[in-house]
Image: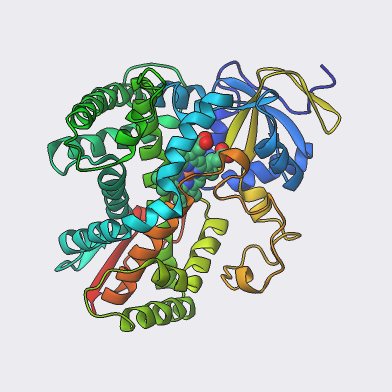
Length: 447
Ligand code: HEM
């Protein structure tokens, strides 16, 4: 036992979960983690969400987590995530299964495909602004951005039409999200219990959707060549579907969860930053106005236009560095592992976090300062140090998708609206994604 890392596993099942979740909600989780690192050093043991874990940090630790072989360490979600999202989603699969499903997903999310989506994405943004911003004086940004990014994914990836079905999905996904980082004890009215119930309802809706897409595919009537159709199209020699119905349903849920809240949070914090920092706002506005002026009125943005939005993307990158939407994640050891002279027993969780390298002043000078120019002027960032999208074979496949929707949305916001914050409180809480105070209420004026 003296070979396992220092630290304590705390109370059975509960471990340090409550104190960690409390710190997340109070936005002191970065400090909670940093204090742990200071107290125990590069590796320590704890117990989170019902299972023993080790927390490791720093560039070498990130590399170890992101590149370790599937035979040593597997991707692993907490019990609550696994039970709510399902055990056949990409984040639970490994080896050949992971490669098979990931490549189907990635073929949809690669730039060559996304180039074709820009127009559709832009239509969603225009429709959103027309419905929720135009004619309004006061709005709350985060819930609206969640609506927007959810609609973009529903339309572009899954071809779920507007209406009652989409509205139900929005509501259930909110409950799913709230249950993901919870203690997996299934008592009535707990977040976990509500998440499980919402998950069962969503799975039924999605199964119907998959069957509809299958019928459309078989009758060649499919107008939307979305992700579901593509997954249904992966066939073996005997024309048998190679991606099971459960795999399709669980992965739709994963993409909805992984893809909509994260981007909504990123765009919301950019909106807050632009209101708070006139110099950065002026530089972003100049870049976007130049692009707007170079085009006939009403024409859609092109891939080339997006490539010109360099400064806007640097602002987004710095936002992701300082307020990463994903706090961290878990892997699970498949055998006893030696790390830094310690033993990590088989079956334990390995916990990594983004903030430890993002806020390390050996990697980013003056890490607390918001400085988008660091991505222009600074020497290249060492590998595995800037990790808002993770790294290695499991690095976020939605990176380009998120980049495009962020740039398109910011383009429309800064060229069509002026805004100011209605709430001076710059605090955030994590739930588990960062949430600005009161969801970021703002006062808007059309330009
Ligand atoms: C700002 C937006 C986003 C951020 C910060 C983000 C971040 C991340 C992170 C940190 C991971 C985990 C990597 C790991 O465990 O090594 C991840 C995984 C994933 N993300 Fe994203 N993501 C974003 C947007 C999206 C979008 C838009 C989609 C889909 C359209 C998406 C789909 C996924 C999927 C499917 C995975 C699991 C990959 C795997 O296990 O192989 N993400 N993302």
